[in-house]
Image (cartoon, rainbow, N blue to C red):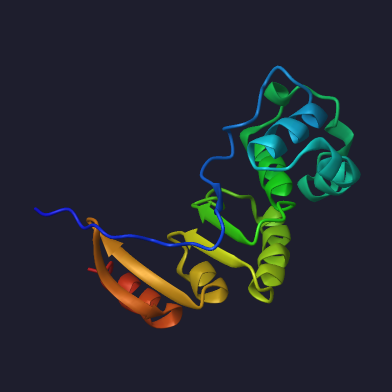
Length: 168
Protein backbone atom coordinates (compact mmCIF):
# COMPACT_ATOMS: atom_id res chain seq x y z
CA UNK A 1 0.00 0.00 0.00
CA UNK A 2 1.42 3.35 -1.04
CA UNK A 3 0.25 6.31 1.00
CA UNK A 4 -1.15 9.14 -1.08
CA UNK A 5 0.79 12.36 -0.85
CA UNK A 6 0.56 15.88 -2.14
CA UNK A 7 0.41 19.50 -1.20
CA UNK A 8 -2.46 21.78 -0.36
CA UNK A 9 -2.11 25.54 -0.62
CA UNK A 10 -4.59 27.77 1.16
CA UNK A 11 -4.98 31.52 1.12
CA UNK A 12 -5.98 31.50 4.78
CA UNK A 13 -5.75 29.10 7.71
CA UNK A 14 -8.92 27.10 8.27
CA UNK A 15 -10.89 27.36 11.52
CA UNK A 16 -11.86 23.73 12.31
CA UNK A 17 -14.47 22.34 14.66
CA UNK A 18 -13.48 18.73 15.32
CA UNK A 19 -15.06 18.31 18.74
CA UNK A 20 -17.64 20.17 20.77
CA UNK A 21 -15.93 19.22 24.03
CA UNK A 22 -12.36 20.43 23.46
CA UNK A 23 -12.15 23.91 24.89
CA UNK A 24 -14.96 23.56 27.42
CA UNK A 25 -14.37 23.26 31.17
CA UNK A 26 -16.98 21.52 33.32
CA UNK A 27 -16.04 23.35 36.51
CA UNK A 28 -16.70 26.78 34.98
CA UNK A 29 -20.05 28.49 34.43
CA UNK A 30 -21.59 28.51 30.96
CA UNK A 31 -20.78 32.22 30.51
CA UNK A 32 -17.07 31.66 31.22
CA UNK A 33 -17.03 28.74 28.80
CA UNK A 34 -18.11 31.08 26.03
CA UNK A 35 -14.86 33.01 26.42
CA UNK A 36 -12.81 29.82 26.81
CA UNK A 37 -14.25 27.95 23.83
CA UNK A 38 -14.21 31.14 21.77
CA UNK A 39 -10.52 31.65 22.53
CA UNK A 40 -9.81 28.09 21.38
CA UNK A 41 -11.37 29.09 18.07
CA UNK A 42 -9.67 32.42 17.56
CA UNK A 43 -12.20 34.78 19.15
CA UNK A 44 -11.12 37.08 21.96
CA UNK A 45 -13.26 38.46 24.80
CA UNK A 46 -13.73 41.83 23.12
CA UNK A 47 -15.17 40.11 20.06
CA UNK A 48 -17.40 37.75 22.08
CA UNK A 49 -18.65 40.14 24.77
CA UNK A 50 -21.36 41.78 22.60
CA UNK A 51 -22.38 38.34 21.28
CA UNK A 52 -22.91 36.52 24.61
CA UNK A 53 -26.70 37.01 24.67
CA UNK A 54 -26.97 35.91 21.02
CA UNK A 55 -24.93 32.79 21.78
CA UNK A 56 -27.03 31.94 24.83
CA UNK A 57 -30.27 32.53 22.89
CA UNK A 58 -29.12 30.37 19.95
CA UNK A 59 -28.15 27.57 22.34
CA UNK A 60 -31.38 27.94 24.34
CA UNK A 61 -29.33 28.39 27.51
CA UNK A 62 -30.04 31.97 28.56
CA UNK A 63 -31.48 30.91 31.92
CA UNK A 64 -28.43 28.68 32.53
CA UNK A 65 -25.75 31.31 31.91
CA UNK A 66 -24.34 30.93 35.45
CA UNK A 67 -24.81 27.14 35.75
CA UNK A 68 -21.69 24.99 35.83
CA UNK A 69 -21.06 23.40 32.46
CA UNK A 70 -20.84 19.93 34.07
CA UNK A 71 -24.51 20.30 35.10
CA UNK A 72 -25.63 20.60 31.46
CA UNK A 73 -26.59 17.64 29.31
CA UNK A 74 -24.32 16.58 26.46
CA UNK A 75 -26.85 18.03 24.02
CA UNK A 76 -26.85 21.39 25.80
CA UNK A 77 -23.05 21.45 25.75
CA UNK A 78 -23.06 20.67 22.02
CA UNK A 79 -25.57 23.47 21.37
CA UNK A 80 -23.37 25.86 23.35
CA UNK A 81 -20.20 24.90 21.46
CA UNK A 82 -21.90 25.21 18.06
CA UNK A 83 -23.54 28.53 18.98
CA UNK A 84 -20.12 29.91 19.92
CA UNK A 85 -18.43 28.50 16.82
CA UNK A 86 -21.16 29.99 14.62
CA UNK A 87 -19.80 33.42 15.63
CA UNK A 88 -16.33 32.72 14.19
CA UNK A 89 -15.57 35.36 11.55
CA UNK A 90 -13.11 33.13 9.68
CA UNK A 91 -13.42 33.00 5.88
CA UNK A 92 -12.56 29.26 5.96
CA UNK A 93 -14.46 26.90 8.27
CA UNK A 94 -14.21 23.13 8.73
CA UNK A 95 -16.99 21.06 10.29
CA UNK A 96 -16.03 17.45 11.02
CA UNK A 97 -19.22 15.56 11.85
CA UNK A 98 -20.10 18.57 14.00
CA UNK A 99 -23.86 18.10 13.68
CA UNK A 100 -23.99 14.43 14.65
CA UNK A 101 -26.56 13.89 17.41
CA UNK A 102 -27.88 17.48 17.31
CA UNK A 103 -31.48 17.54 18.52
CA UNK A 104 -34.19 18.34 15.96
CA UNK A 105 -35.06 21.72 17.50
CA UNK A 106 -31.49 22.96 17.32
CA UNK A 107 -31.09 21.50 13.85
CA UNK A 108 -33.40 24.28 12.57
CA UNK A 109 -30.96 26.83 14.05
CA UNK A 110 -28.12 25.04 12.28
CA UNK A 111 -30.05 25.07 9.01
CA UNK A 112 -30.49 28.85 9.20
CA UNK A 113 -26.76 29.23 9.89
CA UNK A 114 -25.77 26.95 7.00
CA UNK A 115 -28.26 28.68 4.67
CA UNK A 116 -26.39 31.92 5.39
CA UNK A 117 -23.01 30.22 4.91
CA UNK A 118 -24.10 28.71 1.59
CA UNK A 119 -24.98 32.14 0.22
CA UNK A 120 -21.77 33.75 1.52
CA UNK A 121 -18.31 33.88 -0.02
CA UNK A 122 -16.83 31.83 2.84
CA UNK A 123 -15.19 28.46 2.22
CA UNK A 124 -16.70 25.58 4.18
CA UNK A 125 -15.46 22.00 4.36
CA UNK A 126 -17.87 19.47 5.88
CA UNK A 127 -17.63 15.78 6.62
CA UNK A 128 -20.79 13.85 7.21
CA UNK A 129 -22.98 10.83 6.70
CA UNK A 130 -26.31 12.65 6.28
CA UNK A 131 -26.93 12.59 2.52
CA UNK A 132 -29.80 15.12 2.73
CA UNK A 133 -27.60 17.59 4.61
CA UNK A 134 -24.64 17.16 2.26
CA UNK A 135 -26.81 17.60 -0.85
CA UNK A 136 -28.43 20.69 0.58
CA UNK A 137 -25.28 22.55 1.62
CA UNK A 138 -22.41 21.29 -0.52
CA UNK A 139 -21.72 22.23 -4.12
CA UNK A 140 -18.68 19.97 -4.57
CA UNK A 141 -17.96 16.66 -2.87
CA UNK A 142 -15.09 14.23 -2.49
CA UNK A 143 -15.69 10.58 -1.67
CA UNK A 144 -12.66 9.24 0.18
CA UNK A 145 -12.38 5.55 0.92
CA UNK A 146 -9.38 4.06 2.70
CA UNK A 147 -7.30 7.15 1.99
CA UNK A 148 -8.08 7.03 -1.72
CA UNK A 149 -10.19 9.39 -3.78
CA UNK A 150 -13.11 7.39 -5.17
CA UNK A 151 -15.04 10.26 -6.74
CA UNK A 152 -14.97 14.05 -7.05
CA UNK A 153 -17.60 16.28 -8.58
CA UNK A 154 -20.95 17.96 -8.00
CA UNK A 155 -22.16 17.06 -4.51
CA UNK A 156 -25.51 15.71 -5.67
CA UNK A 157 -23.84 13.21 -8.03
CA UNK A 158 -21.12 12.11 -5.59
CA UNK A 159 -23.56 11.69 -2.71
CA UNK A 160 -26.00 9.75 -4.93
CA UNK A 161 -23.29 7.28 -6.03
CA UNK A 162 -21.73 7.03 -2.55
CA UNK A 163 -24.96 6.30 -0.73
CA UNK A 164 -26.19 3.94 -3.48
CA UNK A 165 -23.11 1.76 -2.82
CA UNK A 166 -24.13 1.40 0.83
CA UNK A 167 -27.34 -0.43 -0.05
CA UNK A 168 -27.20 -4.25 -0.14
